[in-house]
Amino acid sequence: MASSTSSPTSAMSLECDAPCPVSEAIFNDLVHYFKYACSAYIPVCPRPNGQNLVLEFGNFITDIQGFIARDDERKEFVVALRGRWVGG
Image 1 (cartoon, rainbow, N blue to C red):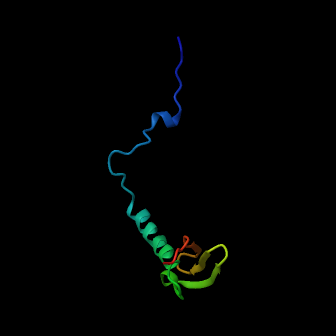
Image 2: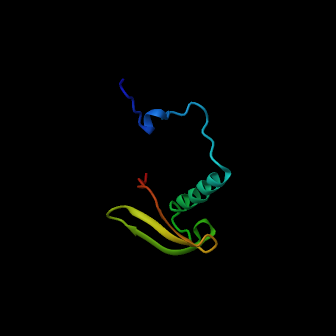
Image 3: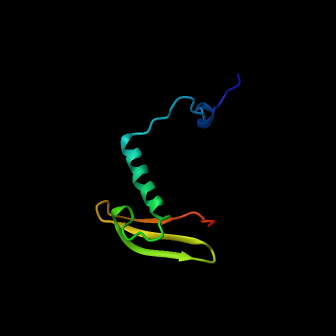
C-alpha cells in the first residue's frame, strides 16, 4: 500500500477566486502607511502624515529621496522612500 503525503502548499489553493477581505484594523494600517508613502513625493513636507520629521535625505546621483518620521502616538519611526522621479 503506497502512502501519499501532501505538502501544506499543495493542499491550499494559491488563487483567490472570491474577494479576500481584510480586517478593518489591517485596512486602516495600510491607509496610514500609504499616507507616509505619498508624503515622500512632496518636495517639502515638514510634517509627514501629520507627524514629526526627523530627517530628510536625498542623493542626486542615485536619485534616492526620502525621510524618517517619528510617530509619538504609535511609538514608532517610519522610513519612507520615494520611487525614481523622471521629470518632464
